[in-house]
Length: 99
Image (cartoon, rainbow, N blue to C red; front, side, top):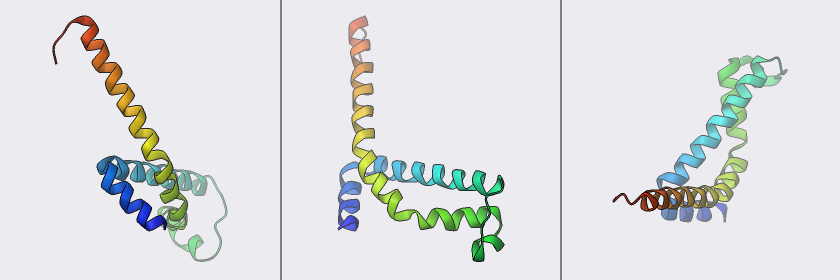
């Protein structure tokens, strides 16, 4: 079900959905890098992979949550961007400037 919803989201929002997904990926990855570098103990296979490798694997494990976050956040981001665009257009119109 989530796979179909993600495909529908991509069809509707395109690059915005991809941008949201990769922004979440980057934030989660950076969070894991910082946590591991700060001394969070990683045991097992992840412990031998190095900081970036361990962070990547840990980030990969969060993929279902990141997809869910993308499904929830993309429409909100689109709404905010629309409002910012409308507000910007409104300011231009108030000054009497054309397009």
